[in-house]
Structures are given as C-alpha cells and as structure tokens.
Image (cartoon, rainbow, N blue to C red; front, side, top):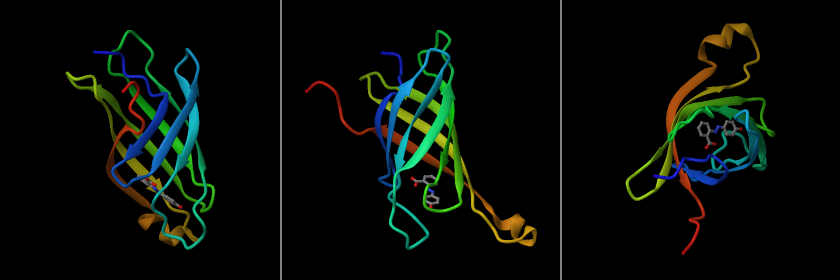
Length: 127
Ligand SMILES: O=C1C=CC(=NNc2ccccc2C(=O)O)C=C1
C-alpha cells in the first residue's frame, strides 16, 4: 500500500475540513483547519495548524498537530496514526484534547475535553 502522506485535504466525522499544505523532510507540516463546529456565535474562520509526523521508513506514520482556534481562545491538539487499507484508502485515526480558555483557575478542572476523531481524504485523486 502507498505510504500514507498527510499532505492534502481531509474531512473528519464532524464535517470539519483540514488542508495540510506543506511539510519538510524532518516531518514538520502545517496547514489550515475549517471547523464545522463551534460553541461560540462568532463567525467560523479558518484556523492555523502545525504538527509533525514520523518520517522513518514507515508506511503508516504516527503524528501530532495543534490547532490554535482563530476565533476563540481555545486550543486543540490531535495525536494519531495514518492507516491505509488494502484498497489504498487512507484514514487518520486520532484522539484529541481540547483546552477551553477559562476565566479563573477555579475553573481549570473543567477546561479540558478529550475525544476521538477520524479523518478521510476529501478529494479522491485520480478518477
Ligand atoms: O472555537 C472552537 C473551539 C474548539 C473547536 N474544536 N473543534 C474540534 C475539537 C476536537 C475535534 C474536532 C474539532 C473540529 O472542529 O472538527 C472548534 C472551534
């Protein structure tokens, strides 16, 4: 199966879209994240993401990346692995931590959410 490259357009199970636009051969990559969910009533804007992935001779690299939400003071970190099935279909299986900004340390205990999220490619190449 082809090596799983993180570069390109991905969509997660919430419908959010992620474009990983560039990476270097040290495994660093960056891109943009257009969320389909937001707890605020502000207009949803594109947010920047930066991350890194394993670059050894791996077919299914592990990675991590951070999304700094541009319209709220929250941050989400994703960690996961890219898998290719026997038909060459790639998925990113991730878990995430969402850190919401809270106004006081007394609320610190309730400020971090955890969950899982899977991404599949948005535009299939070829036909
Ligand atoms: O203002 C905000 C704050 C947090 C957000 N979290 N989104 C996520 C958190 C975890 C996993 C997926 C997403 C997503 O947006 O797809 C989005 C907008």
